[in-house]
Image (cartoon, rainbow over all chains, first blue to last red; front, side, top):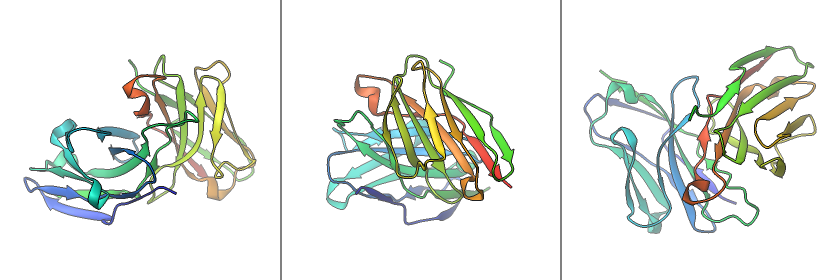
Length: 117
Length: 116
């Protein structure tokens, strides 16, 4: 069965510092990988996605992620964090192809990011 | 494009009552998903619709839960005889039916259910 591990439950960084959020996945087939962000009481907003090609993908709000197949990782990075980035971040994996038609996602438990002004 | 809309945003109910939530997907998205998110956890898949057909259900979807999408547009999720363990955020997502974007799910703001 597929699974996603986000080892860090809570990370605190200073505004302007760099950020890396870790994500490891276990998946039997070729995965489709996502990072979503969730502000308190809100739904999920897609930051970026990867399914093939260049292993470094760019997303919105200055975020990027790197897919490393050998490490089964898809870590999220940002060079300089802004106070508005404080939120919860979720890594997710889904099937690239689906015979049943469902592309349901499996999520990690999330990493809460706090930003010190 | 108005995004995925969910109603209500918050629902407080007493144990044993029935509740119903509504989801309006992005127009022309024929795939619709329901997820449940409990405190400190990521969303967990509940069920999937392609047009009006419910094609997949998670084992998390007990007999007290039922979902419909009668005309292939909006969807409802009903919980009968609510229990305190049903307290969670219920998220709806939709995606296009075809093309490279069919794997990409767009989420609504969710309905937060509190069972007293």
